[in-house]
Image (cartoon, rainbow, N blue to C red; front, top):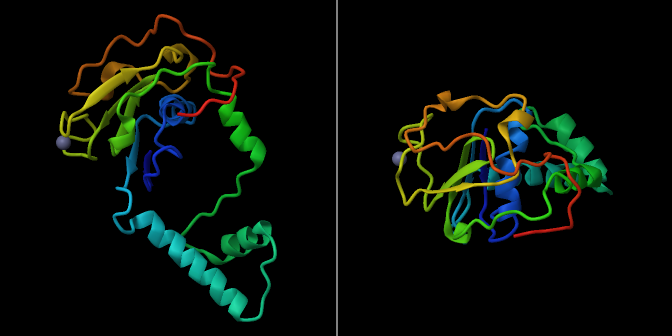
Length: 193
Ligand SMILES: [Zn+2]
């Protein structure tokens, strides 16, 4: 799974998001995850282009005399009228459910605020670096100051689709078992960053 997003300092680029991207996607059957942040204030990327097309479509619809009075109206219209873009409605509870999967404390990801790619090829482990690189994908290349971090709270045994060490990483992959595994789903106080 490859995520492309803009790069606000705390909205996505934080320890909670790094933890979740190194655990949840494996439960959905994904084998590798990369999250790629565009540089702040450096123009528009592909996601902005998609967003722009949807906004233009909604503008034209309203200019044509139709009403879009609520977010649900907008969602229903875009879902029906956008053939090449999948639009998802995300409930408040869906977001809360993700928050509840965070353990009470998550290890800080030092320097994440000025990195532009986070990769997870094994549950509970992330690599992150200054710039995105896929030169050896699906192996992890050492380019652009690659750093590594292992979270304490994810054990491979709890992740049904976790693959074994055949992920082919050329970087060092430590043992899958963490010292203090806790269930993926556990109550948590709200914690960001
Ligand atoms: Zn590379």
